[in-house]
Length: 343
Length: 294
Image (cartoon, rainbow over all chains, first blue to last red; front, top):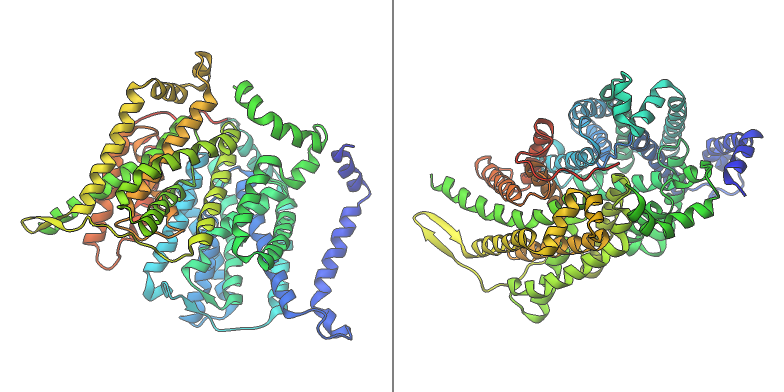
């Protein structure tokens, strides 16, 4: 059975669209359920909290996909922008006494401006050079935040004014996730999105056609940074405490990379699906094997990269042979035939 | 003046250590085009092996090299055979993700076994020589000497032995090497094993002067990357020079800019990295061209 055909059929009857719409309505109603229900504990605060976290990860993974999936520039420092947003919010709220929403805009702006500056320098670099330059940005910024203690609170961190309103965060993050996915869906259909994919497939070819590739890359990069800056601000305010190690967390980079890889690099819905799956899986791992969860996640990433490099959406949408046959070929044919035949 | 000389000596010692640290990274990249993001973690594993033997069997840290080098060689060989050979000829993204995932797995496995507590080793090598107002610590000198010895051995091996020549041939042109009968996958496996052994050895060397903890690896990966971009891929003499430059810069920055401590080293290496990449993408001293990545 051809999975590509099945997917095409599902598309044809618009089933997917209805399911998506119903899910969205359900998610919108979720915080209100308590007021209707007889049972007061139907929707607990912790459920809303973990869904909020999940929406943030969906947004981050989609942002990462915009730069790494579409243009093929693997960004190992995307959490830099998350961190900038978090620290802008933290510093402005706890030291300058701003209210929340202006700081959110300031954080997003700071992240976008920084992305333009750093992108102009690093976006000239090809492939792995870019990846490591961004990993360097990330590590260097973490050390700078730790050193600039009078300003950022340094190692001991900053405490933000506490504010406990779970439905509010829930709605903001849900809204952002929906907007980002819709935006990426739309971008994929514009000339801009086609250009980004062209850069991934053949950058020199795209340049030869007269496309200003650097401009396109920097714009995509700063859009992703802007959105991640907002997520950072929200995260900082919800968490009410930030320090360099929990904001600039190494494992967050691998998590969003893994979510995107699992869902399908360069697809629109892939990062969101991957983020939800991994978040659910991580909850199980966390609850049952707290000590091992990062080890398991790393091994899972290796397995995904080796066996299903196109991810869930990429594999379903691929039309060359059945999924199982391709998986079989990929693994058992890989080691020998690729080493011997490929030029 | 004394401060300047002292910093010079410390910088040279640090640079010598960096040379031993960076070569494994540089050769793996130059020969098979894989950027090993788990480089710092291999160094960390070597350091932990030394610590275990020091803590439980009371070996001198430097003496553990005779055990650590073969063990790391085996680990590298197995990893290459089981995992890396499968991704060598895939797009660079794949090997980047695989080695990055490996680094997380290694760091967390060791954290599971040894907790996050920073460890240190006991050594009888102590004291320093005095030259006017400048002191030369014996430990750092020993590290420098052993590093240089390891680097020289590797250079001679690559230059004169048959295996070394086939490694260089595989680096220059994979297909031509295949045509003259070099079995690429085993050459790769041995290259990887040698490089991992060297990196583990560098991890042993650093145990007397730095605390050992599971997450010590990443700064080393970044520094290795900075030095390699500075010096060109797989270029041993360039790597020596680049290591010296980074070592000296780091020590001078820590000496003359007050109140920043040595954590700024990572920022220094990042700034160098970006500057070099922008000004001279092929490295300061030439070297191997990167393996063609399609």
